Image (cartoon, rainbow, N blue to C red):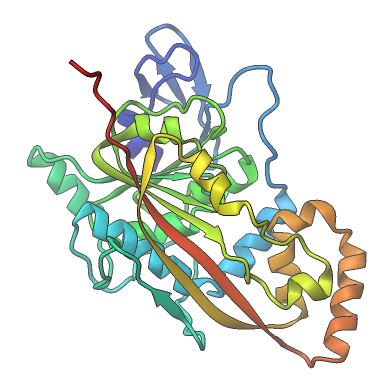
Length: 338
């Protein structure tokens, strides 16, 4: 809920602390931001247009695809990485509001890199977080940058039994869903390319799944010892759909661009998460419609391409899902020579 994360937020105008006052967030300097009836708040300010925001159609496609469990192995890997880096115990995943079951896919592979830790299994409820606060201990804070529907944040919160989740995205359509994805998550609209309305040094982990990366801001909001969990598509992601349907492919400079985006960080570990999915026509349309190819593909033309492809390959197509899951730590700052 939004009330759980107010103490970690600050005014996007003057950077002062904010408080929840009825149906608005307010700072001491008189800036106010209305809370939407869906439970989120927009902290996007200024006249400059934000980065490209997912449309309602893209968000609906993503919600349907993820809620069906197609990327369940990836969600489990993200949850494992978060749990390993906040040091929390966990039990089997049960608590989530996004409706997504865990589905077993053939060929699921998680190749461990260095420093990623091993999973044991997630979760529990709000009582743990409140009990920790009552004892004067701070609950782990997990920030999901470019959170979309909050699907991966929900999995992470189930892995950290007293964690608090902060989801933000530039798309209000996505944030509406993220605001109710988990009982211990709050959501707000913000642009990752701008200074984030989050206080310094409050986050234990920043999650970034397929979203833009703002290394300096991630470093600012992380506590000492905090890490960023970054997920990007691998070269073979969505094969053979990319070639058959003319979709955008992962460019060869992807890793270099990720490194540039994580300015001020050092790579601490990396693993590949890869598995096969069997997708029908509707599911293929969803996975295309929720990603960057949606901006470059006419829906009617896409349906025709899918129909033509399935006419010679059967009702379902075995599709490869492949990702790089990387752990970044803030790089030590060099000290001036004496």
